[in-house]
Length: 127
Image (tube, rainbow, N blue to C red; front, side, top):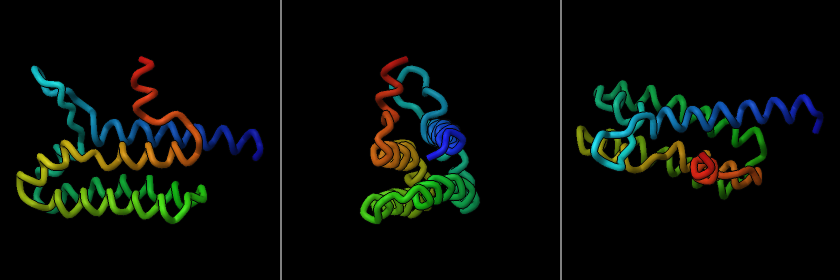
């Protein structure tokens, strides 16, 4: 792989990590250890919220596919997004589920492990 391609992939990995953080862990709920992201907040808008955040999830899936992620791992990633989408469609309870499920972080972790890159949680613990 050329140096340019390695640099481009590193940039895309950083973008995916940021995207997952904003979607799943953007703000801490005061007085708790819970973090919620835009996925949970935008999901409060019936129908539209889940569709909008699905676009970001599909971005991660497309990158994983293009980078040659094995079908077994892609299947797990698609399953995470499907669970997030269908459970999130239930009014209010689905939004609570979204806050805990964190499909985008799970998918970025699966992809990073496949690429043999430090998983999301290992990076967080280094801060």
